[in-house]
Image (cartoon, rainbow, N blue to C red; front, side, top):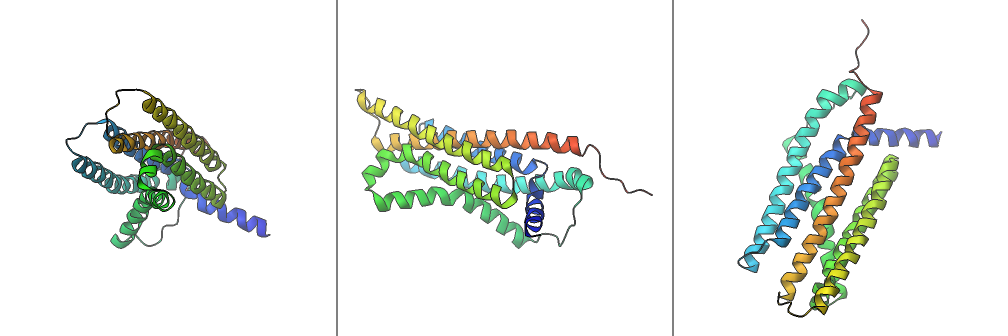
Length: 243
């Protein structure tokens, strides 16, 4: 009996992901953030302060606008495509405060992993060592954090594809870390590299994180699209009550 109840609870939790729209929206947001990071990591800036404020501002604006747009688009898609096919019992309408909480939680989910990595790095190493190894282990750390999140989410909702996504994100983070290590070693052994250590380290870190988010976003898009095709095949037309 407990197994059946637990299985029913997992199916109910996973219903938000039954059509693949949520994964595709999340993938699109990650790709947008990846584009900002990749562009910022390779675009020349007049000064470090201007560069830092520009990157931070673009990321914050992209997160806020992207999360709000994703919520509104998902709301419309589910109201017009998903719920007419497999049903939904709507409760109270979301208030402005509840929408703000959703946006805040999404922002914290995207921001806190980077902040946690930075705090831990400062606690266990000096600033110079952090700058030296940041391009290598930041993508590894973020990839593992994302993998743990999707692994737990997959277990909580009983979604096997989330476990596969977790494995992919962990492997992507490790591969990007190794790539950055090789690039850093090559740069350190080549004469004539005059770029300051700080800017070089930060640029490589942004590039690595950008590729990690790009790979993760593409994986979510593919997973969501495959899920959508399966859902549409199983539910080709909206449900109509018999008269």
